[in-house]
Amino acid sequence: MDKDNLSIFPVGNKNDAYAQYFIGQSYLNMLSTEQVVIGNVTFEPRCRNNWHIHHAEKGGGQILLVTAGNGWYQEWGKAPRALNAGDVVNIPAGVKHWHGAAADSVFQHLAIEVPAEGGKTEWCEPVTDEQYDKLGD
Image 1 (cartoon, rainbow, N blue to C red):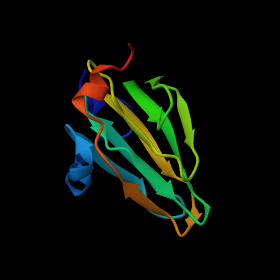
Image 2: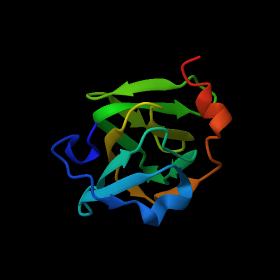
Image 3: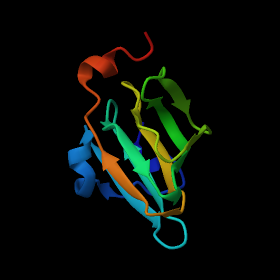
């Protein structure tokens, strides 16, 4: 799969600003930084972000709109959910979770930050290879 032609949204550059919170290579193209923040995030196969929480005093959370490829989403203490193009994930504020590509697929989603008062992201531990390799078992 050609990561540069996954969807109508450009892949962007290597996600160096957040590389410390990812295992594997991701790319980021900020589509909007006004009103509602929207980033197009592309993950190479097996790439995933660390567990993280979107905190907010009011409002907040995140919405993922899957635009291409296959991936995974998991909330802390729950079973992982396979993701495919066209899937939507609504993540409330305060929920610890991670998301990323399937082992054999490039994966792309639009990450929409739900407007929040006092919003911030807390980055937590990585999803280990051992945890990742158990997906779909």
